[in-house]
Image (cartoon, rainbow, N blue to C red; front, side):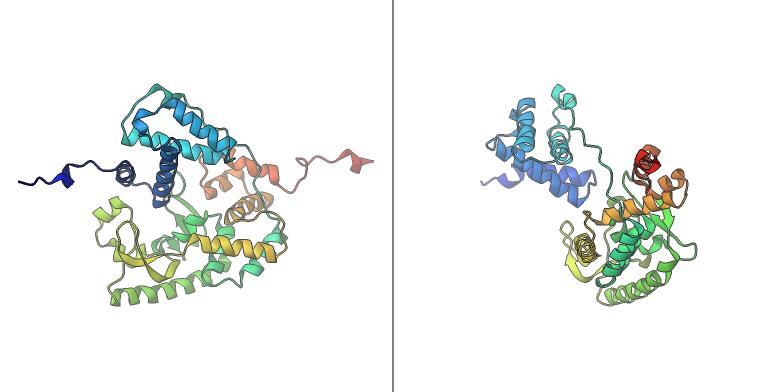
Length: 330
C-alpha cells in the first residue's frame, strides 16, 4: 500500500517565508525583497540552514555587505530586517542576539530640491511624455504625493468638487488629505472620462477587477469590480497578477514615471540628481518659501513628527540660514 508522501513533506524554507509574508499582508515588493535577502544570506554561508546559525553568521554577512559590496546603510538595514523576519516570524526562534543588533545609522542628508524655474523647465519637458505619465508628474509636484501613492490612486479618492485628494494607506498605514491643484482639475476630469470608458470595456469583456487589500476583499467581495475602487491611472493593457494569477488591469508602472522624470530633467539641463521623490521635496520647500505654516506642510506630507518636515527649512533659498555674509557687508 502506497502512502501519500507529498502531503507529509514540510514546505521548503523560502515557501514558508512567502506564506508568512502573505499571511501578514505585506506588499509584493517587500515579499520579493525579503526572499532575495534571505536567499543571499543562506547562499553566503554555503547553504547552511538558518536554524543552525546565529549572531556570528548574521554579523559576518552584514559586514560582507558593507565592506565588500559597499551597500548603503539603508540597504544593510533592509537585509537585517529580512533576516530578523526569518528568525522571529518563520522559524519562531527567540535568541538574545536578535534584539542586541544595532542598525546602521542612516547618514542625515539634505534632500535634493529644485528651484521654481527648474521645476518649470522639467514640467515643460515632461509635457512630451505619454499620457497619463505627464499628468502623474505634474500631480507629484502639485500635491506632494509619493510616487506609489499617485500611481495607486483610486477613483473614489478624487474629490473634484472639494479640490481634494484623499491619500489612503500612505507611509505608516496613514490616510491624509492633500489639495488638487486648480490647473489639474480638467486634466484629471478628462483622465476619469477615459478611465470610465476602459472600465465599461472591461465589464463587457468580463475582465473588470482590481487588487484590494485582503481584509477589504473579504468584507466587500464585489468591490473590486466597482467603479470607485478602480485605479485612476490604470495600465493600457491587461496583465497577470503574480499572486492571484488573475488577468486584469494593473496601475501604471512606476518605473515609467521614474524614467520620464529623469529624461525630462536631462532635457531641461538640470544637473541635480532628480527623481519623482525630488518633486515631493520641492513641493514642501516651495510651500515654506511661500510662507505657509510648517504644521500645514507637515499634514500635507503626512509626516508623523514635525522634526521630519523641519529638514526642508535647511534647504530654503536663504543660503547660510539667512545670515548675511561678512563679505557682503564690506
